[in-house]
Amino acid sequence: MNEYDDAVLRCFLEKQLQLFPEKIAESIDEAEAFLEECVAVVVDSLDEVWEYFNEEGVDLEELDKEAIATAPEVFEIGDGRYLIVES
Image (cartoon, rainbow, N blue to C red; front, side):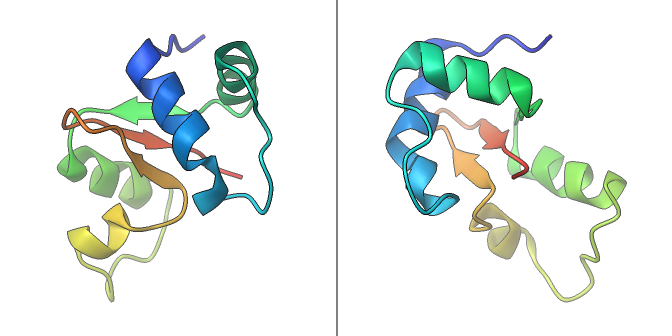
């Protein structure tokens, strides 16, 4: 099971509408439960976001790293890490 720290959980709560049409979590506990359920991943850099999508078989030929960073399922935590949530 992934453990999500406060920075990750707050990031998801603040930015969840970039991926979903309405809020799915109203509290830290709800955010943590949702992220655990969908097995969201926290990575340490944009390079690791790129590697994650590459390993998942996403066609990256026409994208650059900045485009990946703005994908709806990628949340910039603010400390150099990224949260990846597959809907």
